Amino acid sequence: MANPESTSELVRALNDSGLCRGDTIALLTPIGSSKINDTYRAKTANGCQYFVKHHIADATMDQQACIEMFEAEVAGLSALRQTGTFRVPQPLGIGKVSDGAFLVTEFIQLQPLNNQQKFGQMLAAMHLAKGPERFGFDIDNYIGTTPQLNGWKESWVDFLHTRLKFQFDQAPLPEKAQRQAEQLLANLPVFFQDTTIVPSMIHGDLWSGNCAEDENREPVVYDPAVYWGHNESELGIMRLFGRFGDELYEAYHAHLPKAPGFDKRAPIYELYHLVNHLNMFGVAYLDRCIRLLQIISNLLDQDTMF
Image (tube, rainbow, N blue to C red; front, side, top):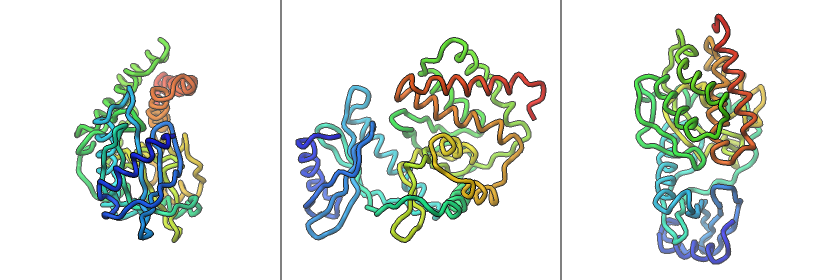
């Protein structure tokens, strides 16, 4: 959590930036703090409210990297808004403070997600939104604080290989698990035999903490790590770190049925996020990564996967 001196400087920077439509900040109220960002509700003298996210630079992310992270978030929010599906906070701009950077967006009064059926329907609609005929995004972004490579690829398998290898190269995996990771990379095409993949707009970090409902009970998503990719990849982090019920998945698959091999690809999409958590937060996630790599290795050892 930012200290009072840092918060005072943030108020001054917000006022100087004009991002709150030129209004003076009367009150900056902490909403929450994570291992990545501090968040606030800014209320102006005329009663308008804004959401503010503040990242403090450190040895792992200097001020320029903070700015680039927020620039990528603005691009991601804008891309999600263009699908015309979920409600997504409107980004208003980015500013600097001496200890980092901040992002200002529309403030939405959030409530817990209750209508999971509607959420599943809207997620399918987002994944079915028309986009480019290749995989990636216009800029690289971040998954948490980890850089996420989005260079355009014609092949989903090539794109996924790049993503997984980047995570594996940083991960403190024991020797056996490292060999299994290399085995997965070498055999990745096996999991996609006879599978046609149309690029979908992927939120990228859609765990239960990054979705809610607004005051009208309409689903809201935020904090994206977007790219155009395989729709199944979205579900990996949802299964790992979501509190989503069967009604969501039933509504989703009514519009996007499970393709052959779905259940065998699912551990790969979960593994990407688990290894990222291992790289960000340490060995608390190591055992889960090892178990998933063993599951995938067992699948590859089967005579017939599909």
